[in-house]
Length: 297
Image (tube, rainbow, N blue to C red; front, side):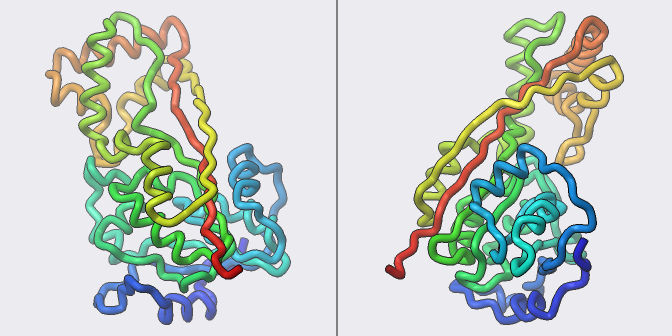
């Protein structure tokens, strides 16, 4: 992999970025570390279906300059393999002061996304400087995704493309649980919706509307449902008690709102189902691509 030290070009782009919404007036403007990668990854591997689809949507080719907005730069190795030699992939990482300031809440559930929700802070990149922006779970975690889309449009070159894979976590649910009626399942779903309102508010039509308002065109999307089986009681318990973005598990949230007795009943329904068969979790996902208009012609 490329060095994790910021390159000279990256540092200069951060300090001299042109933007109509410049954060230069803020003493704590540098909330993101910019790293520009230009080397082949150390290992070659088969691309996942998500990597293949996102890169195809961005129409990535050698020599291009890309930005990967995924948490943990998840698409960077695959993107580097497609753009080098001659190209680059820029990644952004929250600084220690940014992470210290961020307090994940139910309304703003992901630390990465909340970097942009603190205030209207632009991406620390020059206008019209990249050929494509790619990412996984870029828009869905944000309370205000239009702000991100506007800034993505700013940094794209005319004719540049955005290609993202969004996991609609707010719509993930078990197919059925033993011992719970449809009404009880709906009660639990309402609790989880209230705990993660930003995630539940995000839909593909919501993203498409915001993209149009941001000035992006040629918007295309495909949706699919990923089905994951939880096999065994341990896997079911782990999923039910996994701490969410605000530090509270689904089990804790349901018990807090609907009472400890219902919480125990809900947990036992997971265990009872897992003893008899795998619990099927369905999570809708979406691939979205869009283009910054080329008005130079």
